[in-house]
Length: 180
Image (cartoon, rainbow, N blue to C red; front, side, top):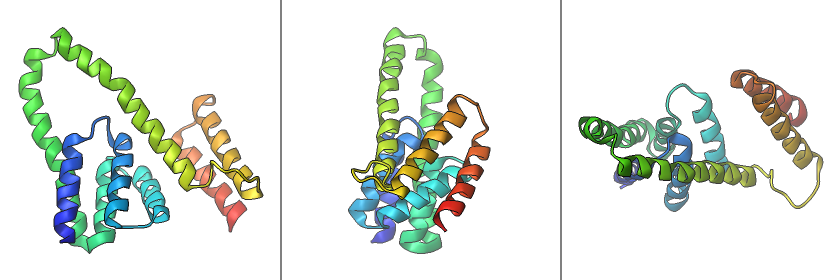
């Protein structure tokens, strides 16, 4: 039953999710909660690992969720399920897109999807912030230090144009220093 739930869920996600892996995170979070495949903390850690690992984050998430829920078979089945719709859709769309991509209606549809994708990514960020206690009503050393790491990381990425790998490594070192 778990294997069918994994395959069915990730196959449907692969067909209906637009905007890339980060836009899929809220949908993955909903499925994980619905089927109780892992805790919220495990999900947050899994998304962090999936984001740092090479490859598409949605596929990495599917593999980690599948592995947690049903071992190696679950990981393989989840990976195939989430990637198969993309393969089918890309081949199908590529065959027709060359003929219709200049159509103003098609251009308008894609233009209209851009704000949706942005909102899904912002939703995922807010959801992570809540799960990681970055949005808190009480002031503590932990909450202030988490917000400070967030703000400095964002500053380093946006204003200093640091390589994300350096920001990840530095944030991890700060985490080890502050929380171990």
